[in-house]
Amino acid sequence: MNKDRPPISDEFLSAFVDNQLTQEEKADAYDQISENKEINMRICELRKVSDLVRLAYANPPAAPNAQEKSITKSPRLNIAACLLAGLTLVLGVVLGWNIGPAQENQAKLAEHEKMKIDHTQMSQRHKKMAAKMTAGNTVGKQISSDAAATDVQTDPELVKILIHLNSGEPELVQESLDALENVLRYYRKIGQDARIEMVANGDGINLLRKDVSPFPERIKRMQQEYDNLTFVACQNSITRLEDERGVVAKLIPGVVVIDSGVAQLMRRQHQGWAYIRV
Amino acid sequence: MKKLIAIAIMAALGFGVTVANAGSYGKQKVVYHINYKKEKRQFGALRNIQNHINAVGKENLDLRVVMHGGGYTLLKRANTDPNMQSKVVSLKKQGIKFNICANTIRGKKLNYKNDLYDVEQADIVPSGVAELAHLQAKGFTYIKP
Image (cartoon, rainbow over all chains, first blue to last red; front, side, top):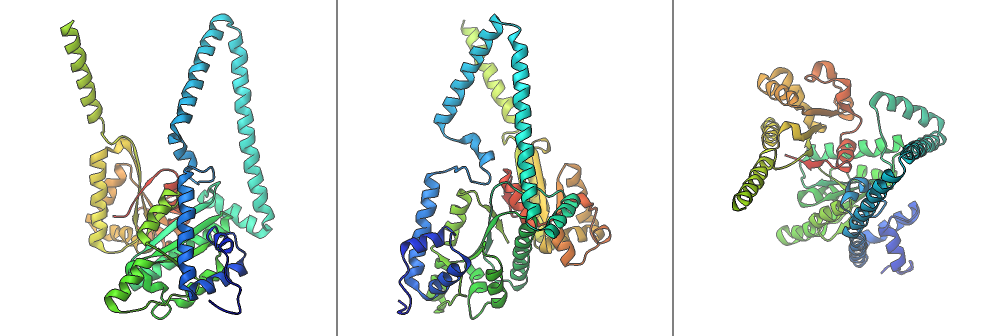
């Protein structure tokens, strides 16, 4: 361990894994991680734990596509919903039988309810617009003109994307970085919260190797420019490189190592991340 | 009574068969991702899509093609290559939407009206990657042929 630095605590690493550090703390952590194999392993473990916790509490309310998936929630909830529906039906039949005119009131109530929902939806939209406008007048103007042209919709929740690179083909690698940077810029422009992970395995890890990467400076610049971007390298691929070709991979500072790239693809998709293979 | 049961069973079986025929896969929402320019691979992708339609039925399918990076060459080829063009036309007739990334059009300095086959403003998405993520969040299955 480095002597002039205090040892990294588990709390600090947890905060790092959960993306709760400030820019400086994160940069410092990145430095230490890239120098230190032991910390790297601890991060791997923590990520696994936090992923498992998230998996155990599947369908958290903050998941981006929770609305779509919520249909298949828990069986207990479904039973409750069925019971409720049944009860409502019986109640409705009984009420309809006994007091005909009440129907009219119910219809009015339903209409009122609907108006209320419409209203809250409207005010939510307004709040969002207001937030965007306060984010800066020029930005606000840009958004509105672009939105009119392309009919852009921001997702209400955090957008999470995993971009999978497993090729070292120069043109593809460059185009992948272009696409990555384009989407980061786009989300920043429209004010959409997003987390993006580029996971490299196989020949893809060459992009993240200090000595052979065709774009080391670009990677460093992108890391600094976008704190919501993480470059991830697969430990299995690094090990294979060493076993098969006797090459010890030195990674660009800030690159996070994960046990298995493929396992990471799986975990992330379970957690509701979009998957894109470049 | 026996007759009745037999009829009931036959009716049930018949019902089962018709359900299976009506599309054993049910409704599907799918997005195909094309970001490569190899002609053979692009033709392969279009063939996959046609097979997908044949299996699921066009009425059960909301299928989008999202192109960015080198993928734009598919629509460039369709301008000059009658074979590629007829494939695109045929798929569009079956309700397949071809979307292309605005960043790619800008980056490759394309004039979408002249350089690309049958692209309208509505076919252009602000970011190919964001579109792929957005569609997946809406329940589309991602396929990279």
